[in-house]
Image (cartoon, rainbow, N blue to C red):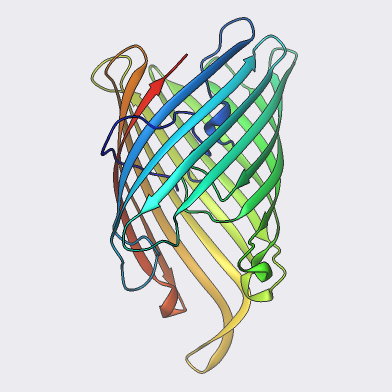
Length: 306
């Protein structure tokens, strides 16, 4: 999940893994002309975290995240590249203080009029400007999109990512996944629902798990054609290989999470928009020490340099 509030001026608009599922980080979703084009953006986010460490006992924190991003796109060939660097700083704890870097490249090809193929390669160092990730990551993700009609699309995707945690090597390892999404345009609005299955194959058994994730997203214009409201919902179950004692018996640890994210983008000029965000994540588990509730409120100012 990925969320910010403003307390200043301008941080990046390269974006990152969008949405909760993070199937396609938003770093490549940049404006493009018919020819090759470069774009650059700044943003500044200030975020209130109601439970920054995702613990049973919440620790409140305020964060300030300035960032800069550049992107290159050639729509004719279907190639895109993006890079982001951000300085993440939080109060009450220094665990999440870091300089994060993320890059992504993608290639798109049309197969006839109804099939589109995408392939993406990505890498990040200590996460991105929109997550709570401390790992270094590399990954690839192919996707096939089937255009059923002018308003309806179905996509099937896979991904293979490797995350390395320098401070906790035992949690490092690959994480393959596969998913499907249904996308329907409703006049000026858009509805997307999806399912993803993912495994984490960490070196340490205690960090290995299987995850099923169900997602829904609704986007609509609000207060003008340039202003948009976006609502995302997610439910996922996560079963670990590690065993814990429950009622005197050894059983696998099982987590259930519910998350919601509401964003409102308001344009204040041809190059600038503000994003207000409210989000929360709740985890319930048969291990009481792993349950938490984490609300977030944020506002971010984005400025497009070119």
